Image (cartoon, rainbow, N blue to C red):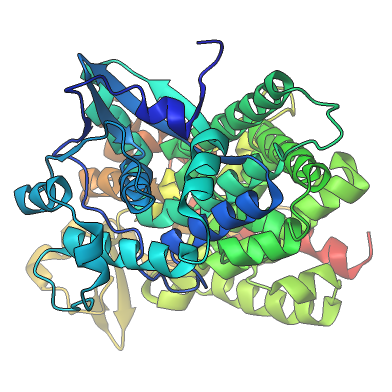
Length: 567
């Protein structure tokens, strides 16, 4: 065999007398012909229209590869059982009379139906929507659909054409790896459908018949194989669990195809209409080139720590797919048109404004009046002395402390940055540095705890800080600053599990646990540099809380007033 591209004839002739195509028990049943929301055609209609077009225009049809295990005379189908079952029914309808056998280990009744298949009997039946077995229902529906599409064509001519011109990659693998590879390839079958159709159409279009004879079949096969390998390398990149978590997307090829299609929701018909309307070799290769450049831009952004950190923060701030897509489309459009340097400058501004939950249109149009309002709202949250107890302001505090830790990571490695671990955002918690359970405050002569509950006289001595003593006087201006145990000045960002470890420990005990405890599962929060800097303090009293609050608010004003002053 000169290469692994097989015609349909070569594929079915792989069966030796006594051998079978085996549909193993771990496969799902046959469902081709099932209607899918958003698709104009089901899989059977789609492939039949492709075959008819190829027959009428006398051109090859290239389909997605088939992955198998070869075991004696049998061929066990790992990926491609739907296509193989279709062609079994297709060939039977066209009265193919050479040896052909399929074993349906998925279900005995389905296997018996295929063994005893009588095409004429099926054609004389009415399709029963209440058919007991799903596989058999779709076997019958497929045969009836084939008849409806092909009954006007000469069976002998169409059979001859299909055996010689239907082609696909044939991929044998070791039997011991079959179930693992099947799980990898089919774990998200519903999500894979449109992406697989796009891939098949791109490979088909990139390998169309060259009527001038300038490209040999060997060259055509080599081009198609190279493009398929490239596609698979993108698939491998996006299948990484850490990347999927970072980009907040689990579909095959992640954001690549939606960004190519300029639409968050991908459908095959829409992609084909926008990108492959003419289905020429030139257009298919142009799409591959554009995808190649876009994927390279995505990988470059992911590999640059500072860009990675800015994008990661924005994707976490934007809490739905549509807003994330809108941002990503804007950014990568800018990279492609204006280059990485300009895009990175604009990305930093987007990173700042997105913190305040300003929408995309207002960010990209530099609406400073909107910025001013958003700054005032955010600052009101940061200044709230009861921030921890207010749900909205708690979120503001969490965002701000996430940002402070991200910025510290961006300063690492001599300003080249270190990638931030965004798992913290999914498992975030705010921790009181000075334990809230040790702080009392007075109201009309009665001492209350952090929850405004009366403190009994017998336990008053266990409270080590009075809220009125949480103050700081600037040594230069003599200005006084006040805070409480619930303010931003007394809070740090931690993983929830680390937070619970502290309980009501005093500052020294927390500090000791934070820096001295070891173990894989303990204190993941140690990667949070801003948090570390707080726990590295030599002491933590009321003055430190008020001073830290003042510093955080000053830092906010310093970083955002520049946009109002056109700096």
